[in-house]
Image (cartoon, rainbow, N blue to C red; front, top):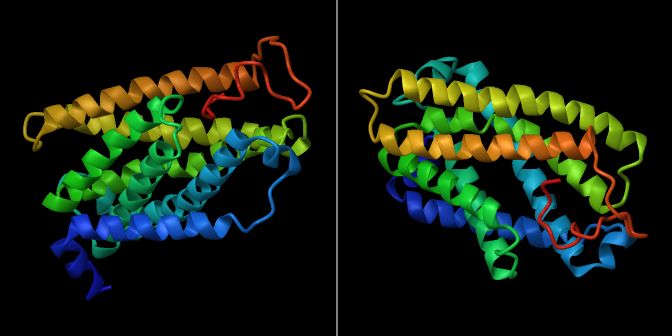
Length: 257
């Protein structure tokens, strides 16, 4: 660690690309795992399944890593501007690599149009994280922002169960309850804390206006996703459903419902 992190700090851009390639390799390896038959029959579903498989690996890794950083070094939570450890810097570098890989996967596979909301989210995250890596500022803020990945584990699990047409199963119903809890605590709670920190310290923060604007845009997006989640899981509309379990307007939509 003492040798690796100085190298990453010397070449943050190249380091991010290296981790993006690692996630590309993970993507290739996960393709060897069995896939539900209903997913195999649809090209778009197959792509979504592979994309979500890599996403859930990233979420499991970075969500637990971010929590560990705060538990071991509590200063991370209180000094979002200038505090960081070698392990937290490495975490942000790894996560940025994933977002670069995922954005590339969406664009290069031709799914950018239906996934434009996620691309916008990725652009905001990548720009903020790269700023942190190049300046070594807001690294702690990026670590705290990765708390949302705890919720992403249950969110991605939910979406994969829907792709497998298992949305009537007991596993789905248990997961949706856990998912709504983690959405409140780790996604909405994290966004609220980060927004409060920026507003409270706005007068002296470096490039505070950009980070505030980015945070407000992500807040709007997350609240929209939350309303969709509530409607889909707790207040579903009666839309025509096909035999494969998907509605007419769902088959070509990047998973958010």
